[in-house]
Length: 447
Ligand code: NDP
Image (tube, rainbow, N blue to C red; front, side, top):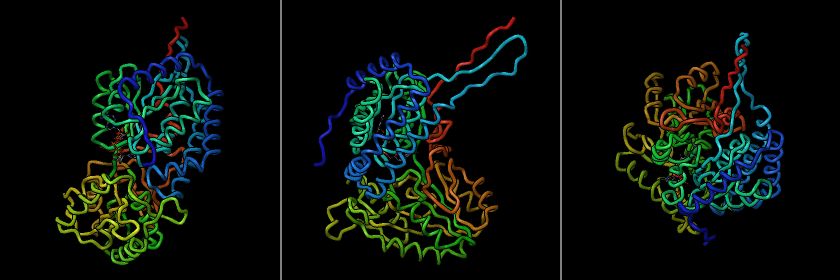
């Protein structure tokens, strides 16, 4: 066993929210002070980066190199939002001699943040940094499987913020998460997780008309055109689906490859998938780690079996890793499958594992229709040497982010969020700070 963590209850949520409210009422830090505070948090994460990375790998199973990348990105997000505190301005209407109108953005007060297990520290920083930049207090419920970096981060943060301004309530979704979403003294909920739970969160928040940001699931298409540089497209495709062992909301899990390059692309991708060895995630040479839990292995394998039963042809993988020393671990082989029916569950639903579905296309309009014909609209990829064509295709795809000739790139400042059932709101960007505020218009009579 790695650690024993208490499971918070609604009573703990009540205490945390009460402390957050008290801390918020007494916190009158201006933009400069908030900027310094966010930089100090970034400095502290940076100073402890190896500890954060190791905790993340132990907790989640992601390869240590990827965990180190997540920690560096978390630091960068705190620094980005530190800068944003200084540019959080309102508008002034042109004078008309009778009135003076301006707007101010005021913090909500108490924000409830709920995060998943796939990027525990990074997604926490996506919420905490803009919430604090805007001047809010935060109560955070991390995923039950991966609370360690959230607790470590809270340990660092409590050295720099007033008591109670940031609290973590670890525990289960129904016991700690749900009370947070229903709490009448929580002013905003920032949730990342699956679409079904996101809908429940929204329903709960609706009772008090509480503001919500929802970052939900994805079933993301990647389009490969006949003029794509196949080697580079395969590299991007590999990252798209197998990064973080397929446990990314942005996973490019449906790949539409033009018939002219289908076999060449598929063979190169399959070879890379077959050459990908599982390994101990704590070793720096490992690029493919275990899934987060046995439960998630079973979930992925249920989709693999369903794909097999509905006539899918497996070009690579399709099994748990049975070789020693990994047979008792949570490894699923990098899997590439073709021949699936567009309406089948594995094609329509988010698998959240290393399973890539391939489709061959020749007619552009029919391909785009299929690419868009899912409930989700989070991300997409386009591989082509022709940037005009890339631009047109990016416009045609229903997704909040479209990567061209690359995949899984998340620079601080680029808005991230979904179309359709992939969510509401944008994270990681300048506009995100505004999502943690309410706009007040002040209209003064000049007569
Ligand atoms: P879940 O939706 O199961 O859980 C997310 C969080 O919500 C967890 O902390 C969970 O607690 C909590 N939770 C569960 N039930 C409730 C409830 N009734 N009320 C309040 N909170 C609740 O998602 P996973 O953790 O399984 O994460 C994977 C999902 O997250 C995928 O669908 C993925 O696409 C999505 N995701 C989206 C991203 C985006 O930015 N769009 C980024 C990363 C992931 P507990 O741990 O106890 O289950």
